Amino acid sequence: MGLAITVMLSACGGGNKTPEGKGNSGNKPTDKKTVEFLYALAGANGEVVQSLVKKFNESQDEYTVNATFVPPDQRMEQITTSIAAGSPPDLFTAGPPDISVLRGTKGLMTIDELSKDKENQIDPSMFIESVRPVVEMDGKMWGVPISAGIAGLYYNEDLFKEAGLTRAPETWEELLDYAKKLTDPGKGQWGLLLPTKEVLFTNNIWSTFLWQNGGDYFTSDLKEATFNSEQGAEALQLWVDMIQKDKVAPLQQMDENLITQTFATGKVGMFIGFPLWITQSKDFPFVTKTAPLPKREKEATYLGGWYLTVPSGGKNRDGAYEFIQFLLQPENSAAWNIGMGSLPTQLSTMETKEYQDYIKNTPLVEPFADSLMHAIAPPPTENYAKVGTTISKAIVKAMYQKLTPKEALDEAAEEVNKLLQK
View 1 (cartoon, rainbow, N blue to C red):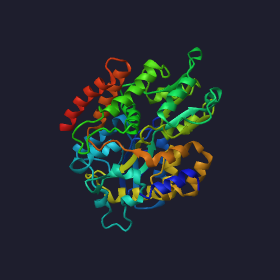
View 2 (cartoon, helix red, strand yellow):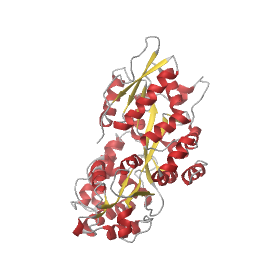
View 3 (cartoon, rainbow, N blue to C red):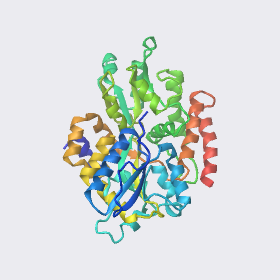
View 4 (cartoon, helix red, strand yellow):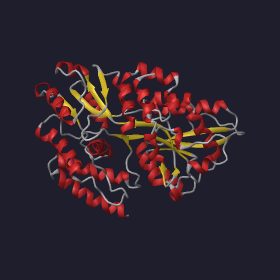
C-alpha cells in the first residue's frame, strides 16, 4: 500500500472537446425504465461517464440511463430551470456550492429518504471524512460524493535543478524564495503563476492562502463576512507583493486554462492546480512534479469534486439509486476517478488493485491524496458563486493596485454581507 493510501487511511479515522449532447447512451429498449442523468463533465471526462453508463445499461434489464451533457457554466441554469418547470432529471452531477443552493425545498431530496427501505444503504460513514461536510447539512445527507479534487503545487523539476532547488517549497517564505530563484527576466521566465482574472477560480485558489493563514470566509453562523480580516489582508498582500514588488509572477489575465498553457511552455517554475492536469502534464517537454501546497499557520487546501444528487421531482428515483449504487462499487468508482484524474471518496476504491496500480504508475497523484485530510470545502451558502466572484474582483483590484488589499477586501465584504442577508 502506497504512502498516499496509508495517509488517507489514517485521515479517515476521524480546452476540451465537448461530447455531443443527448442520447449518447444508445437506443433505449422499451421494456426498460429510463433514468435521465444530467452531467457536466466535458471532453475525456465525459467519455468516462459514457463508458460507465454503457456498462450499467448492459449489466441489467430493468433500467436504461440516458446521459446528457450540459456545459459546466450552464449546469446550474439548466437544472434550476428544469426544476422550476417540474421536469428535472433523475440524477445530476453537482459541485459543492450547487448542493447549498438546491437542497431542501429548492430541488433536492435527501439521500436518507432515497435510501429508506433499500437493502443497501448509503450513509456518510462510507466516505472519507473530509468530503462529508459538503453533503451533510441540517443533520441530513444531500448528495453522494463520487470524486474529489483538491489544489496542489505543480513544479518544473528541470528549472528547479537549474536553480539548485532539490525539493518543493514547504512554507510561504520558501515559496517566495523559490519563485525569486526561478524568475529570469532575460529568458522570459517566471517563478510562479497566479490566477489574475475576475472568475471564481481566482477566489478558489486564494482561499487556500486565507485558510492557511488562519482566516475564514464567514462567521460560524454564515451571517457575516470575515475574509477581510487581518489574516485575509495578509494573504492577499502576499499575492500583491509577488506580482508588484518581487515581480516573480506576471500580471495578465490568467485563468486556469491560460495558466496551464503557459506552464506547458517550460518558462514557468510553479503553479497551483488540481489533479485533473496530471494527465496533460505527461505531454509537457520537461519533468513535472507535484507537492502539497506550502503552508503558513496551518496546512489547508481547497476541496472541490463532483457529487451525485437526486432532484425531488425526478420520475425515476429507484433507477437513480441503482445507478448511484453501481457507480459506488469499488471497481466502477476506480474507473471513474482514474479516468478523470480525480481522487476517490471511499477507502474501498483506494484499496482496489486498479487504483493502487494507478498510484504506482502515476506518482504525481500521491501528494494530492496526502493533502486530502487538510482539504476544506467552500462555505455552504447558496450565494457562494456570487461571493467567490465578488472576492475575485477584489483580488484583481488589489493586484492592479487600484486599492490596498484591506480596502479591496473591505469593499467586497460590504457587498457580500448584503448577499448573506438575502
